Amino acid sequence: MQKGFVEANSDDGLLEIFGFKQGWHASLVMVDLISAKHIAQAAAIRFELRGGTWRECFMQVDGEPWKQPMNNEYSTFLDIKRVPFQSIMVKGENNHS
Image 1 (cartoon, rainbow, N blue to C red):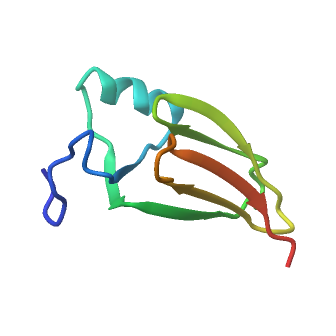
Image 2 (cartoon, rainbow, N blue to C red):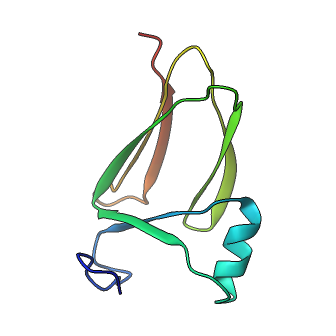
Image 3 (cartoon, rainbow, N blue to C red):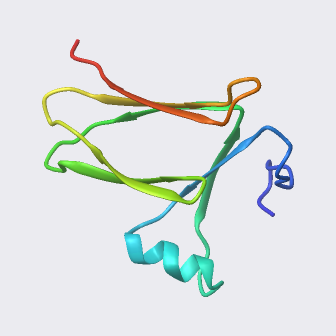
């Protein structure tokens, strides 16, 4: 366990945020050949994604992967939060300002 993080538990209400270098990196982590970068633990998180030359970002929440579209002209915001009495909700929006 990394310093500053509490042990993960399925009912602790915290999201575990990890970073991977490439898509294949996740596969090697799942079979315990290498480890992922543990970035944060939080009850909610907001990502600001800036595309630059990238047109998409590969994301995964609760085992469900998707390609998040990005634009090089404006930031894409992705909010992940726990809503009382419902499943975790994933909401993406673009900020044109």
